[in-house]
Length: 316
Image (cartoon, rainbow, N blue to C red; front, side, top):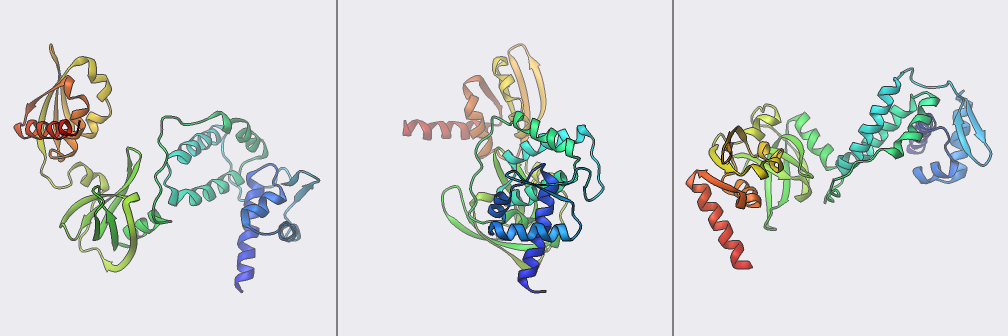
């Protein structure tokens, strides 16, 4: 079978999915979606009709499937349909762009098995749901990057990357990826860096080049959360005294930075942390509310905070 017929088969199958996903599908929309002429769409629809698919053509409106016809025989409850719509809105906002087309294709397959009445339910409700308080997605330098990363994890093959650090330097690394995670509006990979001989986080939008090598992993890894919680085993205990009026604003971030205990006192809340980011991350976070907090220990955090404030004051 040549490439022409393979492309036609894929397109005809995709058109059937579109017909099963929506009450009405216009020929011009299909032509634009698959980058072919309207006449080609007419021929593809005719192919489906010759195969016994009950397509109804509505003049000036488009095509639809005869009500009651659906493949495969999967049924969803109305509550499940509504959960799909809500989840889709969340995914549209937070899904990484390299997975976007794959997710959209998967959702079209889900929609294709819904009853006609449920399709109308989707059309009536999906514009009434939205997600706010998010930031625009960052643009990657490489298309399809997360599938490449996930393949390397599944196949246990090392990755070669070129990475731009926070100070704009370019670094070449060989890494063994443990997992992928989303945090504070960015996608990251947790990996063992062969150059550093330690675990490192890499922000995906800063990867300039990537390719999967044929070199197998040199060691076995556990779950990603094992390494995010304790990437190198060298945690530092931190004690802060925080004023009560600010504690409500730290609900999520204090857990992220390693909160292990919270004690209410007359003069505020004593927060106890175990953190790996004592040199950089923790003092930069602390500076955002430092006027409402006191560092009880360690002295090294006080020194780091003082040095950071001095650097800032020189600039202003």
